Length: 138
Image 1 (spheres, rainbow, N blue to C red):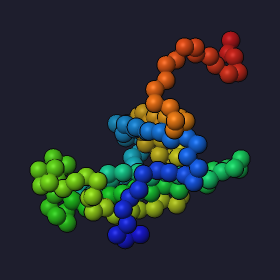
Image 2 (cartoon, rainbow, N blue to C red):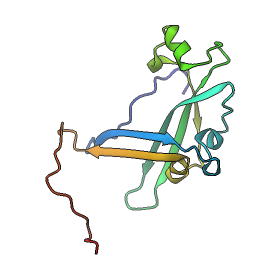
Image 3 (cartoon, rainbow, N blue to C red):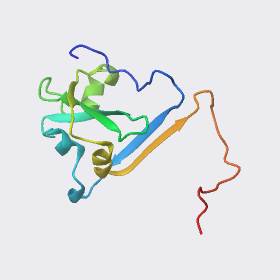
Image 4 (cartoon, one colour):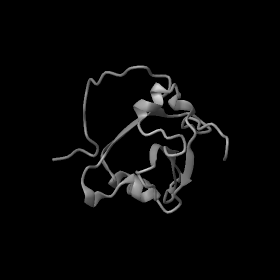
């Protein structure tokens, strides 16, 4: 995949679209995304993670990749320095590392919080007027 632009997440039919956010865990026992990917944080930084799966009712077949900036190549040490040099984050030269033995659960274990939100793409905003649980809980 050398020279390809990293594209936003998509599916053939865009029934659900959305956003996501995550926060690294600060507990050493939970592991880290860098450890899962074999990335040494000294000269490299993970700048993106891509996760997708196929299922159709079966056990999900997860595909996880990380995108890594090799800071040592351009002697770029910090994000702020990259911005000062006028490097657009959307066009950083990154290395894609596929993680065939990593699942969504493995990635979630590395996080303190992780949040995915998918909604019908025709909706802009939503206002909750009722909040229930299914099945009902005692």
